[in-house]
Length: 133
Image (cartoon, rainbow, N blue to C red):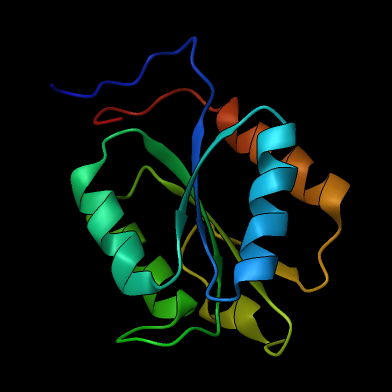
């Protein structure tokens, strides 16, 4: 069964966070704002989801994660392989991430402002759908 982007359906956000409690809190916040959420506990798992799902429109990722790549490397891979996907990066430890962000990526230091995050997600969701999504 092929997946296509239905403009009437909510945007799908992939949350990538290795800390289960932080991931659960982010998922709850984003779902309450009306988005559909898919979860990954590592960048490797996120790449697998991006390779198999065609409906992910936004990725919200932590920088510090175990595995073969951190959130910045994941963001660079997304920008290279899936250019239309919007990216939000967060970290409680890294403060100079802005210099390393790929084009159009947004950085939120932890703890992030919930209303600002939702406003950013809604702005991304209202962008016109690009070819391939």
